[in-house]
Length: 191
Image 1: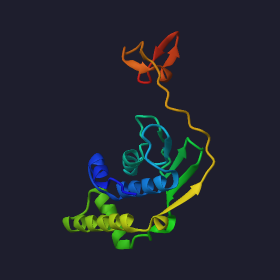
Image 2 (image 1 turned 180 degrees about the horizontal axis):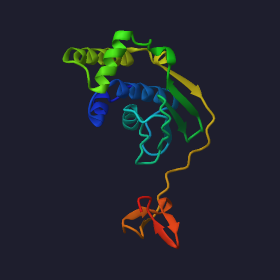
Image 3 (image 1 turned 90 degrees about the vertical axis):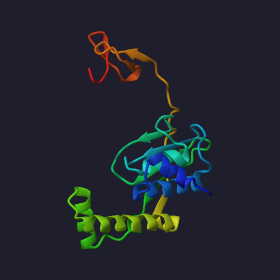
């Protein structure tokens, strides 16, 4: 299976460890469930809001816009996938043992880098650590990086298209299922 990694990087804007995890999750999902979804044949549920979601959208065809990617942010590096054709469903997550805990110095530098307080030398070192992590993610055998488990999952509904209705407060067209009725008038969440 050949994945369009360069296209994924262009779509996301840069190559980072989070995107690399998403590339590998997509590789696993396609290995387990078959080809990329041209429409809604494959459904993905992201348990994270990280960079990995962009790779999953680009490579699997599960997208927020089509409604066959659902975001359930639990802060976990995990995704669930469901194949409508036969109901096969899997959960893919990063293996807990795939990366050792960082050494104290690496942890200190990465914390300073994320906080924006790293010196120029520490910033260069942080970039080196990130590059090493990225290379490890991309080169590890898939089954050492990720764990896939069969799961039971109810059939996710196809994406529904709702009419848009003008909000009684601001007048902006809003998807009707997201309006709230108040004293006989329909209001958007903002109003």
